[in-house]
Image (cartoon, rainbow, N blue to C red; front, side, top):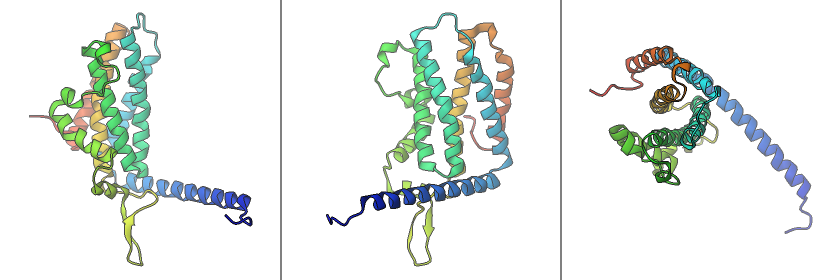
Length: 242
């Protein structure tokens, strides 16, 4: 290496480059979010607001004291809170155009809600350090969704790159966009996200009723849940099994 190499100048150049890249990425994400909101159907928008609001209202009950917490209950509360945090991260990722990252976290949440159900029905020691069995819990729904989520999370095929959005350049080059951009698959990504979160909020309502009893007003949230799932069916977000 040349002795004339100026490490300080090099670091400053790298810092400027990194900052410029982040600034460009932020602008790209905001533009992508604006485009998503323009193209989001009214029914999807109504559903999204209802789902997010219901999750917030139901999860606020977790701040209340549980009289007899067990190891299982503590484990489930931790999983539930992690799910909720991730749910809102996924919302942002979808609207910002980070679809591969969104799908990967949807897979994480699908496994989390599976584990919540497994804890309800199995001794805890049988579950520890084992991957949640999505197909065993969700049957046909798991068979249809989980392989797709795994393919994307592992970048298992070249077609996954299409979720990055492919750009055509004036010089004839074609390739994925370095910065996030609106992708036509965004709405389909949201529908899969919604499918998993609907299952979660239903589980959470039943869980709260089991640990808080009459201290938790299930009726109000259950009525909202019914309205929300009807909106989802009417807008093709979910399909009722015949």
